[in-house]
Image: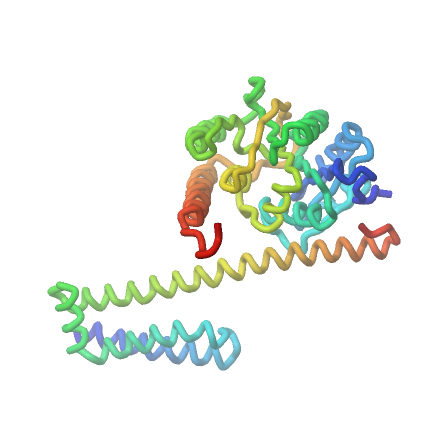
Length: 119
Length: 254
């Protein structure tokens, strides 16, 4: 149990550092880093607060605190995947609309350049 | 020089034929020439979905105008781009013919006639109304039969060829599709979208030639993904519009 929590602490700290470094280098936009930072902080708190983890496992009706930990981690990442799916879907829709708009404007421009009457 | 996409003087009768194409250099030239032979004077717009071959060049040489997409959007995005341009240009009717040469351009006048006279918002060129459906593969045939069964209660009428890409629409459908159009495998979902708007459709028998060049995007392996994807899309559309229908009217509105 202690080993698992220590490993989780290391992973959380590494995740925090990685995300902060990525934000600093502009690899991740600030608004999209918030989810990762919140997840990393949540995992860090859980890994350093054994009482909290035991209380959570008791509330969830689980006899084994590591199981509760796995459940929390799973839920956190499911929520994040959902959030990013929403973001990706919106970006894809925007991207398609922009590509279509660009193609249509280029079409109009080409028609104008060719000296053909515009509709 | 390619002819202009200018509606003819009788604006109410204006027709644009759109041809979505992706890497169809071997077939698209003949498709455009066949359309011109079947419908002289009708403008043809090839929508090039960022092909890496000479599709654009061949289409222009054959006398079509080309709408070139900046990157690959897939069939739905490609067709919708054509619908958007047609809607902007004020066309009353648009007929879609695939760029692989499987649709017979000689059927276009009948689709156009049905569009003008039937009052339906959509006319589908069906491979199965005259028993000419043998050109579809076994797996695809099973998929088509499955979707016929699924769509029958949703649409309230039978549809024999729900995956046909040979489709004509009028300006009402064009307005809807220019705003919202399914992006992947759009044919079946588009039917549901129209039905939820209480638009009507009909099928007329058409010839379908076997593909002579290139490969279909729907392979046997992808058929399962296709079925799941389209099924989900159909039910999402049904739920979306049913919720709207159940929403109570705002106070003060009749």
